[in-house]
Length: 165
Image (cartoon, rainbow, N blue to C red; front, side, top):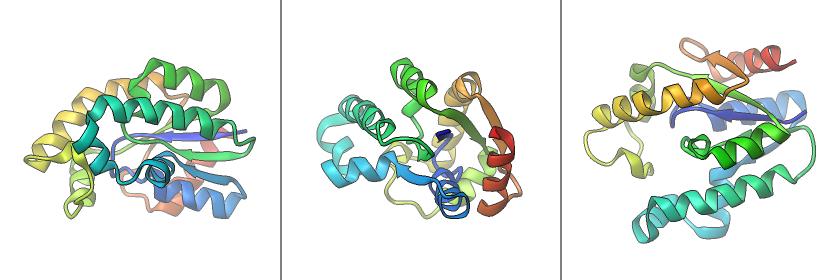
């Protein structure tokens, strides 16, 4: 069984996916890392070509990642599930788990971040705005929801596994 983690930037998708890979023997796939291997830094992609182009290559990367076999733990980019096509591909091949995190915790985790192109401007306002737009989508597409507030990556990973198994 494959597991895909979705949620806001800063919710811990990459970190939790790494813990699941190590602790439970899953193959780790981070779609943002895969994109950066091929196309370079995400900030540069946004700056040069815009969000639309990024979303296009993100969709193709997700499809490519899903073809890597079984027992994958996939960390998705924060906006990956905004595309119905991506969601259909993901749900066809994996359990989709939303790592739900309150805005204040996201802001704390992201305060020193310099590589998040969608946070340009006042970070607090942008996090609140993006979360308000995306949370209904995350909740609507997820097979399962795991609340991360107050949990470290290891406990979050454990809750993810308990939820999907």
